[in-house]
Amino acid sequence: MTDKLKQDHYKSKPQGDQAENETYLQGRGAQYNTKNRFLKNETTREHAEGIDDWEESNLPTIYMEQQSKTIVNKVESKDVGMSYSMNPYAGCEHGCIYCYARNVHEYWGYSAGLDFERKIIVKKNAPQLLRKFLLHPKWDATPIMLSGNTDCYQPAEQKYRLTRGLLEVCNEFNQPVGILTKNSWILKDKDVLQEMGKKKIVSAMVSITSFNEDLRRVMEPRTTTALQKLKVINELSKAGVRMGIMMGPMIPGLNEHEMQRIMKAAADNGATFTAYTFIRLNGAIKFLFHDWLYKNFPDRADKIWHLIEQSHDGKVNDTRWGVRMRGEGNIAEMVAQQYKKYGKLYKMNAEEWSLDRSKFQVPGAQGRLF
Image 1 (spheres, rainbow, N blue to C red):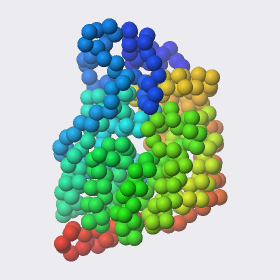
Image 2 (image 1 turned 45 degrees about the vertical axis):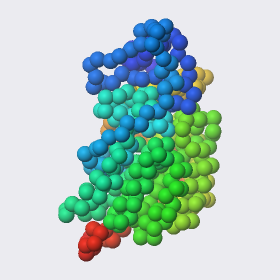
Image 3 (image 1 turned 180 degrees about the vertical axis):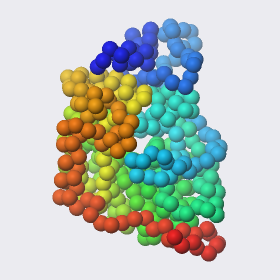
Image 4 (image 1 turned 45 degrees about the horizontal axis):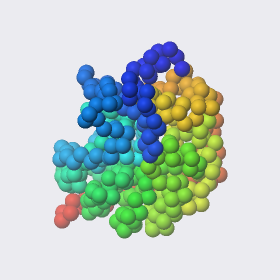
């Protein structure tokens, strides 16, 4: 790690008593709050012995309900495979340490660290906003991605059922939608997904990064197990939903060697398409991941960190379109070759398939054809 990164990393971490008494927070990915680049001022705890002090590490997850102005967002990125996305929740309790969505939480005035996992913004009027959006006379039924940012089936969904509401609106309008999740709660919506599957207006991807439970528990602490995710793929594919897997991110020295096993297991359970990303550490994630890596894997942290740097031209992040999600160099190329080889072996992405936009219609009105 360069001297500059060491300095920036130190500045981003808690200081004083809080740092000295630091303990590993089980069930959380991030171990502290990074500084928010948009805030000039911040509050800190200077003395742990304060009369009115509390143990911040034991704070529960907070759901902050709001009435949003919009729910569907146009995606400008050229290499993420979607044109529009909708996210009923901001922040994610799953706590995946590598999650690129952490940086977005800073726009809300929070930290990309623990705040991202513990302060969840709930867009309570999401289904109503979607209905209003789909009623626009110029809307052309372009597929919309659920979970383009945070997971739509994270634990908050068990209470609020906003994703269920969004799917019901999509089913009513015959609006094509894609889903990405790493939570088995999606099975609660099998009935509506089955209806949408018959009309070819839904496809879903389950994110699987590792079959190593010891790794998953610290890297994605509040997600479901890989075996449970295979059950999701199996059950929904049998129900007529087109199912795929997202292997992301692939991290050299941690999980990149599992690509074949993941693809085979997914194919055996009914998955027909797949995608992957290579680890990149942009913004505050660089500091959070570095802290997590050296705490959990001190024996190989240096090696893993340098392998990531080798795959991004000496850095841990690359902003270039077409390169940032795949990496470059020998390690990234090896992962890409594995993906191509085993994808062909297990007949992934072999079929020509697309979500059906032709069935879209405003309820009660004559359907539109595209």
